Image (cartoon, rainbow, N blue to C red; front, side):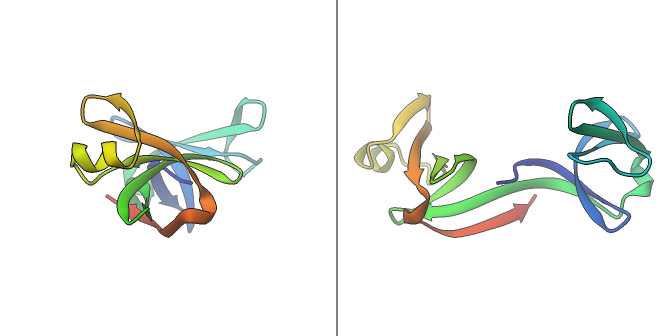
Length: 120
């Protein structure tokens, strides 16, 4: 599940981190022009103008008939955060209160529907 900044460079989407007028692009495999910054982690710094697309990607879904954002996955389970904005609904669903107004849970992936990426 993708959640974070992404940029399209040379026809490929990369995880990205903005840094002023530059972008740090990240890859999990050796690529031309990328330097290894950690085992299995490669980075290339490019000018913002070198990318054809930049934005924030998040994964949304529906679970138990309510809207959620997917925060992560562990095999057959997804960590989801309720985005419906109604505390009584979140509480009725038995969600864990993570912070004020923030409710999360581990949802069986088989019960989650309408998975989709949104670029913000």
